[in-house]
Length: 191
Ligand SMILES: CC(C)(COP(=O)(O)OP(=O)(O)OC[C@H]1O[C@@H](n2cnc3c(N)ncnc32)[C@H](O)[C@@H]1OP(=O)(O)O)[C@@H](O)C(=O)NCCC(=O)NCCS
Image (cartoon, rainbow, N blue to C red):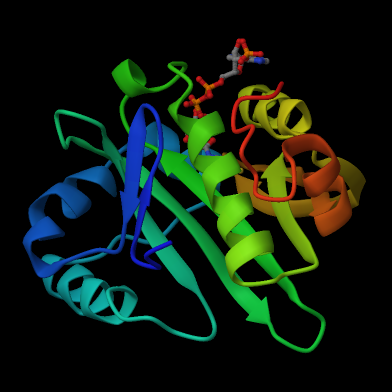
């Protein structure tokens, strides 16, 4: 598999390029997505250009893939393995799909499974974990459908709209992934 390009059924994943700047900048302006991911900072175009240069090169610590709609090449979002820990073979995963018109079409599920396959099979990770706010039932549903297990709750992890919100912690282990999706992850769409 080419590390920088992953082909799915409805989507393709690839590393960012400088030419993605405008679309990536627009993607970061989706306020519903920013609320659901807990992103509370605003970035200038220059900061984003610097960020794109950082994530467009292969790194030991993280793998940032941009999600594109197959056929149209519309930028749908990103799916990221970060906090890669080579000793414990663990990483965090996060995802964002922009625009209501693109959510609920199966893109997020497919992108997560492709990224889990990349993490477990290509990067040889043992454990992939994530955090999801308790007010995000759609994401919780998707992660549990894929096979993530709940491990605990970070109480009052986010302060938003004058209230503290819990974060649910979930993870998947390599054997759990293989049992469900096969050693090569060939059954992408098992549910
Ligand atoms: C969460 C997210 C990645 C999911 O991706 P997606 O492409 O929208 O999701 P899919 O179309 O693959 O699947 C949606 C599933 O959620 C279900 N769903 C939708 N709204 C729901 C709700 N309010 N409660 C429970 N389930 C819901 C759908 O029925 C569908 O389930 P099914 O496949 O069993 O029928 C995407 O919506 C997103 O990026 N949202 C904004 C940012 C975000 O929440 N990121 C995650 C932060 S932890």
